[in-house]
Image (cartoon, rainbow, N blue to C red; front, top):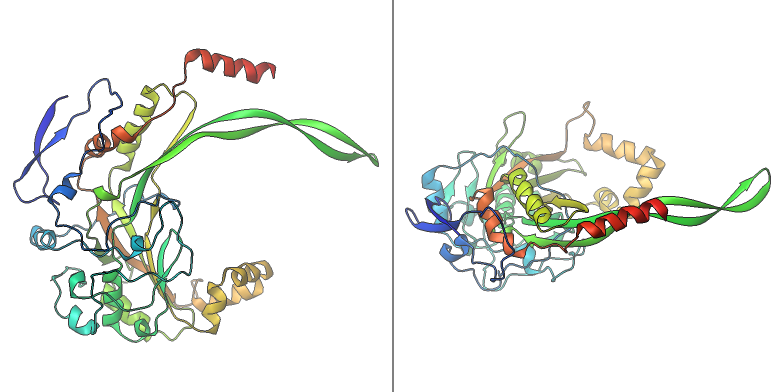
Length: 393
């Protein structure tokens, strides 16, 4: 295997050289253990209680090409000297299980809770060009009550977030942890099957045999890509009116609508198309000839704040929401009141974004995870037998 010398500007100290393996013409499954990630070798150690869990994953795919708003070199240099943010989300996620919606997030051991949000916000590590202060988690986390929203992320209706812009910005900073990203590989095939069906024709009841096609999963596994994501996200606003993040927070605080909410969406900038092509081609090179799907699910990608009252309690309740949609009229009235139509002001703000990125090329990430990719063999004879079975069975 050949090696290539290049400089990785982020996550590694300035000017430091690392060795990155280059894809060989005939890839072979490696038996060696998963190599350590360069960012893990160079980054400061995690604080106690912030170890990263790997519950992968059942959420939606990440965006293909988000519009990244990069920070300058001085800002990145300041961030590289900070410890990793306390990962409050994964601290309470059990291995292999999705977090229960509505379950409170646990406290992270070893990380203090801020007594004054104004004092923490007034002394940020840096303030971005978008006007958003970036604070160190060591200075204190937001004490707001927070609950899991399944794999989507977290949600909160704490009273202190309804009256203070500083509390709201500290809350966004506290939960601006990198999303969980995985590479999911699924192999499948279609089978023709038969079943008996009861039909009534001309007033008489009889049974018929019908055939149908069913998709059968052969294997599925996920490889964690989260360690490759740069741990600090850039919070900015994409509001069409040009409002900054502090302005949107102030708008939320001043809003008197009972269904008001403020959501921050996390996006990851990376060449997922390139990595998809490499993983797909590698699995095919291992001999897999049946159906193949490669996707990149994402979790912990949303932070949402809403106002707690009797009307929002009905809207947030799953059963009440389904009932409102079935009866149509209550759903229509509540959506008009919230401003979902163009005739009224929108009270559900979703224009806050947190942009993360993977500071590696697709070939580097692929070489880092190639030893974890596998597929069962599938010979040409087995393929011929499968075709004959579908024809004569």
